[in-house]
Structures are given as C-alpha cells and as structure tokens.
Amino acid sequence: MLMMTLAPPLAAIFGWIILGETMDIKAFSGMALTMSGIAMALFSRDHENNKVTFRKPFIGILFAFFGALGQALGIVFSKYGMQDYNPFPSTQIRIITGIAGFLLIVSISGRWTAVFSALRNTRGMIAITTGSFFGPFLGVSFSLMAVQHTSAGIASTIMAMVPILIIPPSVFLFHHKITLREIIGTMLSVGGVALFFI
Image (spheres, rainbow, N blue to C red):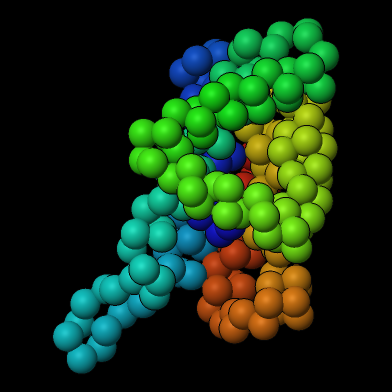
C-alpha cells in the first residue's frame, strides 16, 4: 500500500499529459517527498558491503509499482471517459471490463480448477465478498465521484491516505511487524502526496 502512494503523482502526470490538467513546482516537490518516503521504507544500507539493498522482496515491490501505475491510468482514463455520466454505472462498466480481463487470464493460464476450489471455500468467499462490497463497489464508485468533481491528482491524494489507515489493522488483526522507519517513510510519502492538495 505504501507503493500505492505513487498513484497520485502518476495520476497527476497522466492528468497533465492526457487531460491537460496543470502541474506546478509544489506538485513536483510533493513527488520528490513521496519518493523519499518510499525509499526510506523500502531501502536499507548494507554497511559491511556498502550497498543499498531492498528491505522487501523486489518482485513484490515491482508488482506494487505496476499496481500504482494501473491505478493512476485507471483513474485518469475513467475521468476522461466518464465525463458527466453517473459514477455507479461507470463502476459497473469498469467491473464488467475487469471480469472480462480476468476470464481471459484464467483461461489462458488454465487456472479454472483453482477458481472453483476458491468458490467452495465459504469462509474465504464471505470475506472476499464483504471486501468487494467496500472496495471495488463503494470505494471505486466514490473515487469516480471524486474525480468527477475535482482533478485526478487531488482525488488520488485523498485516496492515498490508505497506507496510514491500514497500519492499525495490519498490527492488531494480522500481527504484522511494522518498524518505526516504515511508519516514518509512510508519513513522508503521504505528506508528499498532500502537497498536491494543500
């Protein structure tokens, strides 16, 4: 989720390129602060070999970056295509398109057995269905309402609060060990994103 704080700066860049939205020195300063926060949380120095190393698996960081890139492009293209259209039907269009994409990927990769196995997991399906209601349905719908009434960069900025909001449940529900360095890095990243809004 920390890597997802890259989505607002990327959305601002794509909004500038695709939608003609403006960017100023404050926006670029926010990007620099966001990047420094991410770097602080994800990188560490190996003093013995004097090398900078990743604190987390590189493949996970790479996929998280692709997630941020997809979020940024998704919000900008959604704003471009939605115009004054109702956000809830717009969300349905996004979900239908997403289903088509997943059907294609599952078919090509031959993972239908895993899908049917997951559908039989009642406890897991209840949790996923609940999460889908609050995330892909309400979350995406409200995010489309946000970009309809303000710039893509500002809307993404407010939505970038997720990395901070997710820290308490990560600790208390999932017992993840989060270091002070990661918390400070998260605060810096979200602070950098906030420069788009202030």
